[in-house]
Length: 344
Ligand code: ADE
Image (tube, rainbow, N blue to C red; front, side, top):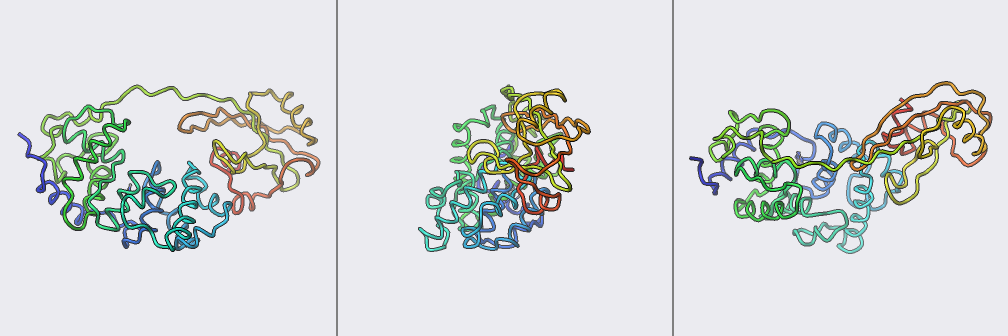
């Protein structure tokens, strides 16, 4: 029989967290700006990948005021490679709102935080519990995995019903102080012990006595996987036009996928070499030669780009494109990973 999940569960988990927590740059203090930026970066991105991004971001924009005043291109550059660029645009909007509507001070409760652009239930819960000691849960994929194993709950972890249920149940378990240790304890357990891939480390788990899946050896069956929708596939031909030491780029439209980022010129179809040269001429660049073709598939959440790129040296820098050397492309121009591949 497993133990009932009550306040003893909370103490076991928070005690373990305090002993075992990773030393991460956003855990140095409880400044809501620090916690907010890290939580947004950590959505969809691994801790190890986030570390350097976080440090660089804080150097460039050390407080919410600096973020509110930053140019979009600076933000996109700081975010380049993390993907989901709307996250940083929303952060900018939220920073402006904090500055203009809240006197530069973060709202210090869940509801106030939740009203800011880009701050959903999870992020509001994380900031409110970690920074302001509020008894509110932050339910992400890690926490849902831990919960569904603890209870052998076959509910759909992608659905809002399950999230709401987990959030309400966890809320009851929050300690009366140091609420952030419970929030981060659950996250840490999901990252270090109750891992998403491979066998969980139930032998080292501080709450295995409470866990039905550990008792029955069923952890790998939870959360129950549901069939995924097929991603749409889009064929693309990408043009790497080189003139002297410069390559042609252009800015993407300001809505939709990778909005406002830069790209190498491209079309949404697979072209053979002859068609690619014709397309180049149509754009007004005069290809001198077509050197080689490189293929690369980039996977986004809902779509896959199957890209083939033609590298051409061209005569002139005129016409519709922006011409940038490799140094500028690396340092100044926000070029998403899908296109950066061809640079590297
Ligand atoms: N993933 C989401 N939030 C996190 C946090 N605060 N620390 C480590 N990993 C996380």
